[in-house]
Length: 306
Image (tube, rainbow, N blue to C red):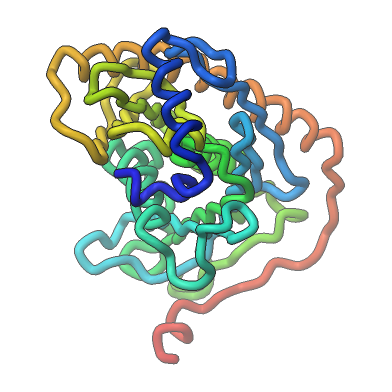
């Protein structure tokens, strides 16, 4: 486990022993209690679907975009949702540019599993013309600073950007109803995504052969922990996904304890996300300026023949 962690090389043997010894007395080097979360800050860009989340020293940006594409043949009435991650070397010297590493792939899969398996986003509402045109929603996650627990910070950023994203409204026209008209935001108000609930990822770190448990590990704590487990739950206590990485097996009683703690944290984080989104929407409404360009049409038959 330690070899996979980006920041393990930063700490000396004495530093690691100090952290382990302090944890035996339930003392964390940043002054938090074992089950205390770091402060969360959520900010939004001026464009819809852009958010920046800071969790302690960890900073993540999430940007949501969408385009019209042909649906999968086995799901002609469902839109698409995909997640891409970028780990900048400026965030952590051990992050290499280019092809995503193992940590980047794992982070994207955890967030994707929580959203997709719980059907948090209504993909059927992304269908414009069954079998021909649906919206493909893309979430790009950029790691700016690695202060530990990237999964939770990236998950919050992804949810915040999804809630503030708005896609153009479309209508069908033409003589045979096969022409998709994409209306500019100045003509018709863009539509928000249908999000049924918020799957919140809560990460736990295991220390001293799984005998010590804490929540929201920092980058220094990640360098000495034996394993970790991320539980994705919503405010109602529904389990969306569980991911266990590194270390030995976890007893059932510990898993149940983690789920109880995660549900409590998920409720408070959900409220914080919704409050931040509500404030953004209010500000957006105040600065909204209407313009009147003409609508543009996209002929489905022309696109299919190209």
